[in-house]
Amino acid sequence: MKTIEQALTWAVTELADPEIDIVNRSDTPLLDAQVLLAHVLGESRTYLLAFSEVKVSASNMAEFESLISRRRQGHPVAYLLGEKEFWSLTFYTGASTLIPRADTERLVEVTLETLPETASLSVADLGTGTGAVAIALATERRCWKLFAVEKSPDALVLAEKNIARHQVVNVKPVLSDWLSDFEDLSLDALVSNPPYIDEMDPHLSQGDVRFEPRTALVADDHGLADFKAIIQQAQRVLKPGGWVFFEHGFEQADELSRLLLAAGYHDIECFNDYAHHPRVTRA
Ligand code: GLN
Image (cartoon, rainbow, N blue to C red; front, side, top):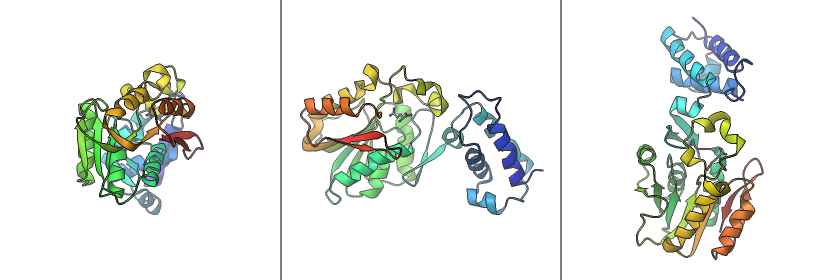
């Protein structure tokens, strides 16, 4: 039987194998191996370091080997685990939604920084997927009313599971294609990380995105089609003086602010992500 340390050494060699096609090869073999082994053992990564000499049972090793083999084929760690951390909360993930990303935490931050903390605002997260953005906002602002809006019924089931997991009673799941099924609502703000990647973008053929739903990633019109649809529909449901917050591609900031200006928005401002790329625009 292998010890924890030996199992990790084996897994890192497997994941860093130069024979693996570059599109499937992990950039973070040690981290992946640790996270997957910790998951199999039901322990933390710290435990792996502290108890590196402990033996891994045959059944745990078999499960670990199967996860490493799927990781070698490129399957995202978040789908192998069925979970991903976002805003220090753990979210169920599944193939029906995008995997929550650290960049999207900027969308949450900018929204929290902009809107008044104490008011009981109505805020819709459009294309909520796992529900990560709506739930993160709801845990920070218990007096806000959040709508987690999603057009995919499978994704909405996942969002509902995450709402239950985090016991956020101020989040209401809504099945709707953007705002088309919203009636007579007056919202204070819209928050969205819509699909915004151009279908020709080479980024789509590498790494985790290959396993994520295209409908959550790709938009027509060089990735701008869904911003246009949301901006157009927002007129019907957003209160005068209401805010919109969008995550977008780092080359889309200028075009998006032109669209917002043309639709009558002002106070348009763009914020960078942690890699210093323009990533979130508010108006
Ligand atoms: N930022 C993500 C990526 O490049 C895409 C998110 C999105 O399309 N909304 O993988």
